Length: 272
Image (cartoon, rainbow, N blue to C red; front, side):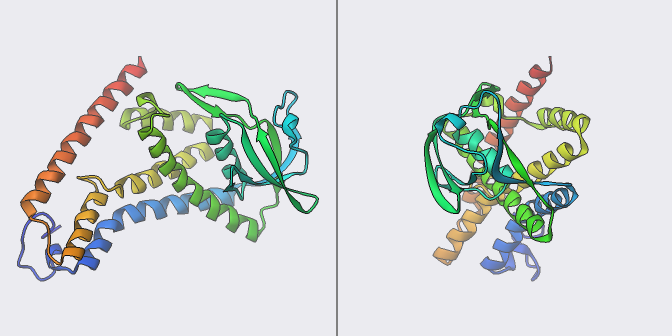
């Protein structure tokens, strides 16, 4: 836009706006991506004939969680202290944290009970271990209240899942094989489309929200990096020299493009 990367005398140019106005403008694209993902998620929730609760209905034949003291009709409300409200949250927390024994807080006979050191079967995908939920849960009727609850918590847990996945990537839990570029994403979308339209649009929602979240990371060349410079300008009451900011964003863009090339090559090799 006019005045974003160069000086302009146009009174409506980006560089003539106040800092708070530029903060809104820069973050708008990423926020819209997240909101679009929320809308798609909400439509998917409304289309589901039944919704999943967090109440244990049935254990598998080789259940190990039952051996730790989990019982049928237990309503699981926390996994290692992390609050869960819907089946999707529960499954995600077990997948992420269930590689080690976890403490489950449940509602049993109207009282909170702490079930300690609950173990789950371990599964592996792309070289990464995940906990595997070894019980089924009761369904919930899709009432207005339940639909609103699932729309809210499915959206918030998706954003949290993206942040935590980035953290797990940086800390080494996920390797480079777990990262996909345009080629890998296209392959996964094709597989999802062949499975069901629900799986396809669920993945679209996650990718859309992922674009928004990643773009807000405080890294050069991303909108989050530009927001950092605007915040600095607001604190200092004067902007960082455009030349310095330009060099930093250029370096960040170069690193980002190199990373994308590496990921694309990895995805293409994976096709064969």
